[in-house]
Amino acid sequence: MDKSEIEIVVIEDESDILDLVEYHLQKAGYGVTGFLSTERVEQFLEEESPALMIVDRNLPGVEGSEFVAQMRALGYDIPVIFLTARDRERDLEEGFLCGGDDYMTKPFSHKELLLRIEALLRRSGALVTEKVRYRDITLDLKRRQLQVENREVLLTNLEFRLFHTFVKNAGQPLDRDFLREEVWGEESTEFHDKTINVAMNRLKKKLDPEGVKEYIKPVWGIGYKLD
Image (tube, rainbow, N blue to C red; front, top):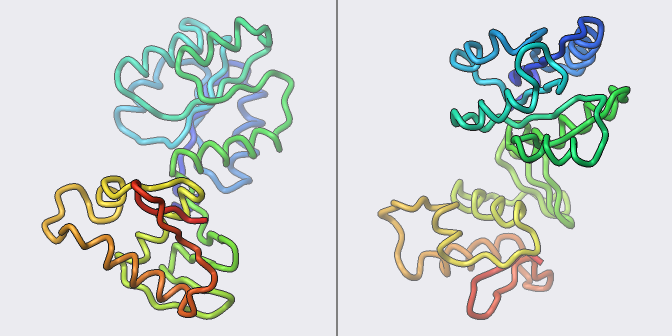
């Protein structure tokens, strides 16, 4: 998803700080909706689907972490970054226990806030890098193209999903059940016992025709891993 399609909610009762945060987020390309309290936020969440919320702890009416805990209880799993002047260990722990994903204490660097936002959006899957590199391989996720040492390798959609799954889990052994669910889908009717073996052999042959680079290695008794 492009940044311009990402909506971020900011709840901050100090209007000058709210204006400044909104300015930096908009300048970075995000869509932003600001609130001075939690009063109308729940209604907004019912109608819109923001990718992230930035919440001040010291809010009028409902305290910030209490509000987030209420949203979590209602089933909202939107990533949350708390802004606060409270920096005691007990306050930090309370924020995380109430459903916060990250924490910044005031005064804070707006550049650091943007970096934390981007990292959290990547982890949540809202912000996807168009190109992913692994060793001498480049995946263009937007065009669904793959290059090895600047040589384009033609993959089927399934093979592309398969290799992308390995890149997202580089260094981790992936078993067959995980690969089936991630790549073929749990309910796939085209899956048979030898399906993964055939797909893996084709993929490895396309990536490494000479068989010397060993990008993907078998893990005995488990499955495969990207090395």
